[in-house]
Image 1 (tube, helix red, strand yellow):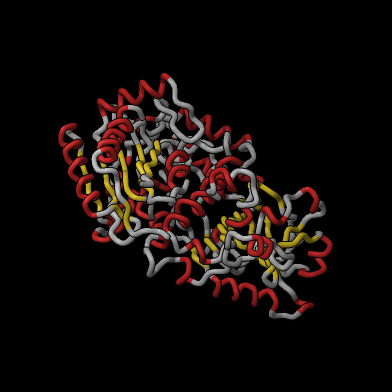
Image 2 (tube, rainbow, N blue to C red; image 1 turned 120 degrees about the horizontal axis):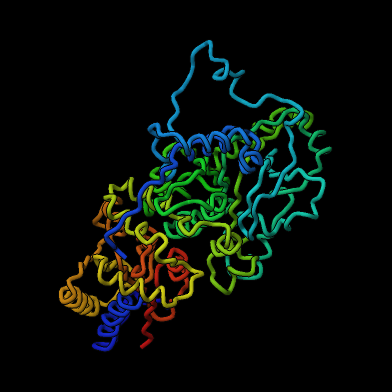
Length: 520
């Protein structure tokens, strides 16, 4: 039986925790330099326009044409003022041209016109168990279709999708979630032509589709630090040049679809209203579709009867499926984090700063000052950090330099409902941490998130060097901490409640993690 609170050994644990805070700081760089903007801003704009001007996905990621390369070379020699570099997820500003004489601004209607290319074959871009990136994935009558002549060349369906039912950790539930053909199927180009003819309508821009039930999506940690973290890890692997300032050439995704969740079930309006706020802060133009919207799409493809079936073609789409990720090799038993499959599959493809466009977008939306946002960027090229990096002499040198230069801020996330320290232990910890931080000249924050606005919570995390608290949702804010040699998460577990949730996430984002558990 889980208890509402748990004790720490009287003197030993409090001293141990204080020692760990010091240890985490000394053995884990705010410096006086800053990262300057690159001098090739206009060339970056040209790259962006090249990537986004074509409807053919493959053309976006092929080498630029000779004409484009000549433009770049001429830009290098030009001394004229240049446009500002694209920052984070902001597309280059373009002035609309709607003059009647401008034929490039005119089109017939607002959907793709049927032609001989209306049914291009489906292509696999990237794949990890539970995370699959497609070009040209089709949907008709509620079934997703992979149009291909070589189905055996594809991953098994069970590694891409699952029956969207509540997941229980027992054999019956595991078997029941195995995929069925009505969820995702292979279809030959000839059969696609026979079924749909030219009645195929393109859904342009990138789509993020989450095929999970609402079981985990309402939860701030599981949505942001697992599902979205994995989606972005896969997507960001298409731009290995993401830099420490969060600049990227990736276009904003067009929509997120949760076909098996109602709005109330996945946008956490009542539970902990962070999910939709988080998404709108990053992608102001993002379309959010839930079960009702998906049902409408399904109905639209079948309203003409069997002889007039239609299909939507998602030009670029990422499928996220939690149960499918647990069928991989990295997630079950090793990390228990579905995002770990996506992380492993893109190792060597993703930038060191892959999460920075998201982190900085949220921080900017929350009113965080630029000098605080840049606490990660000042380490570009001077400290590697991250899950795959082994500590060495360079790491120790960075730590020593950071101790002398970074303003250390310790934030204690207080829980007041369940899984909390006993009042006397909580008070003793407060006294010890206050004394420690005062003696070291550090800043100490006691965080009661329930009394703070969402902006204030993000601002707190962005300014935190060491975050500690009892295992729980509040530690999710570690995803907004800067990645520095001193960034540390200290997690306290109740007896029998150890979990790897925040350990893996912290390390993947370049933070150290220490766990404390008392079983007495």
